[in-house]
Image (tube, rainbow over all chains, first blue to last red; front, side):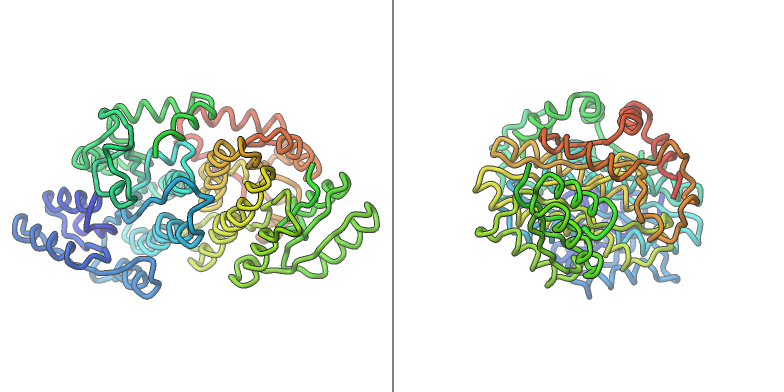
Length: 254
Length: 254
């Protein structure tokens, strides 16, 4: 698929799973995350087992100087990056009015501004080579009202849809991957115990299945990928059902 | 409707039209924009014509310190703001890959971060009083993928839907107003002369009608207001036709 992929948020969750599955296909990797130890451990495991080349780029994407290093890496002409995966993210509690506004701004920057900057940096060399894959990890929350988190993910879905239409003819595809609730450390890091979230077990997805399903859609150059049939159906229903009903369903979960 | 409304982007376009129509209903105003002369002229005219109180707050909203003054004004418990109208905005050329990334970040700040910060500042006192109206000027571009502009407007629509569902029962409504192409100086400011926008005549709306119709929807506490029957029909269609076709429609006009 790609010779070299740069993955943000690579130390855990979907980012780490993309790293494992791409490495298994022989793709060299540039792994980005602020968590140095976790990155080094992941990189060593992948090099040992799969014989791919792995660069580790320790960077907090919310610190301008460190973000700039990732931007420069994407633009290096001698070491082209064929695939960019924007996976870094976190979620905030739903009660917007009680959240610190600075936390909300940090979330907006990591979920929207950072992928926008990295997409912009990756696009020029990809367009000049006439090939490239950009993958934005969004969420099914981007299809339904879900506080600022859902709004940010809808930004990514909207922009990916437009960008794929505009750049696919020039060889660069842009795909928004929209997983449902997936077993990663995401909810734990928000301080939510998975058992207390009150979701039926069928709503939980396995990271492996999400990544494998999305990589097929990415290879096909789809503008959006909603892994698993159950969530494909849920997204279609969200477009047809009245907004109020969708809101009352999503208002209950976190 | 409201006793005091704070309007951003009040010196021209839809912002100025909201100022005129709210003044005509006897609402006191706090007008926010960068252009001191234009704001002063508008304030003088409205005071003379309607006998209302008008405060002028000259501020560049992408400047953190000047923006903080506006947030403080919204949080001033002695001079309550009953209605916040987020109408400051601008557009960029569609060619994302050729736009300066710093311009794109400013665009994101003004279209998303600023309304988010001002809503957060306004919500506290509004929820405390158990009443308030928040109006976010989005665009039909938020329903149709259209570069970063459509994505930012999609953010506002998604968030307004969620926030209206969450806060309406506590007395605070949040409405995303989604105009189609409207006669203002918006396109001229991007450098497109009037008449050369590549838009069919029937697709143009008058600012007066957009504001009057949206104020009716705001008074009803609707989450989304799409002024004019033609655009309501277009938006209805976008929910039914495939996303790729909608994306192609977003390439039309400038």
